[in-house]
Image (cartoon, rainbow, N blue to C red):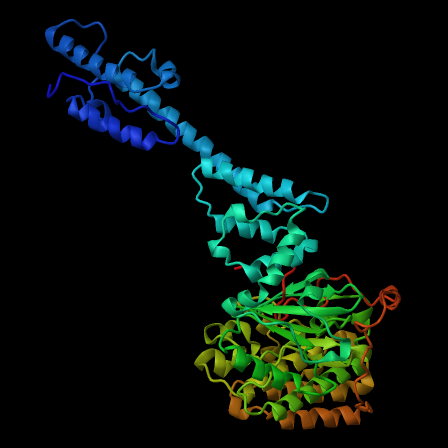
Length: 564
């Protein structure tokens, strides 16, 4: 043998965490002692009890191997191999023990991951106790080999706090750089939380400058003046998540309800450019246009605050609700909705005519229904602020054939969107064009085009309005207008002004007289709380998570504001 002397001063000892290192050291040791067969798979077993010279030498060599293994294990491992008669048998036992341990550890890690994902702080829990629970599970996961950074734990804790701690989450994010924070700095003891808020207020100016954060800019004070602290303390209710982000309803302390929308898809412009675009949008005045009340600029995300419209979206009334709001959509109501949408779009195309896409994202989820089913357009005019890389995924106008196939954007894309909405309203079908995969729903464009070519237009009219026999001619006229707006060749489509003119003519012939928008008066911030309670008791605060559709512009998510 290469070396018959063995020094036992620093022999490796196996542990659960260092098995790989130990097995590598053992291989080197066996090779150094010229008994590597036990780990390299060349070991030849022999019958126990044979006494010839060759077998005696093999037995002596194997005893040396077994002796080395005995010297290199702790008491726990020795108990497992003490009855092994050969080195190969002892080595195999150690391998099996380790493999079984790895499987157990893997199952345990999967269980811990699931527990970690589902962890939420309940309303009755103490913050300190919840914090300790999260840390305890993450430490167990680390013990099973999981790599978890401080940033991951911090975001988990902040993301899963109840709504009443919204202002704390915002205060921390406004005043700290999360990627540089340590877990120890996130001392969320219930007694210290208010101190965090005060501390962040003192640091607000510097934090705002470093992170590109501005104050809440009020652009319409019809509902009163409010600030970010009012929103952060508001009772929040998630309304939906969509291509732009998410949105929620916030009811402030005095009862005023607004919709806060958040997006991370509008980072093209710096603050001055963004302010200019928002001022342009908020200067619009039309009864079919819902202008924002306020906005908030951050470098990586934007907030837009608008009036809360209780009845919700056209999408919800058509497809998601079979209650009163759906029943109200008889033929006169649908005629009114189509006329109002067309009127609002015509106004946008005149006021924002310099933009390639004056609206850019017209679909039924972005049409809210006000009092008496007066349609209100929202989420318009953002195309110039949207990141080019995500425009095709976030703006419905990019579903127009020329945009989808060749990236050609023009006013005609908005006309295509108007046509899809008209066909949706007249047929009552959910358009497959709204789905990113195109699978599901009904291709209303192709369906109506085929019906017109085959002379069976009446068959595609929604049965729920088809019984208005005196109005069948008006319905068919609108279906033809919708089809003319959705032709695949943009040069053959109607212009927006012509589309509105034709729709307005049908509306006039139907006997529906267009009127000014009847605005539902919400309590202002200077009203007292009793007025707000009376308003709520009349049923204006709806708890549905679906009323504003599932594709609104974005939101200050009540537990994730500013997190990545």
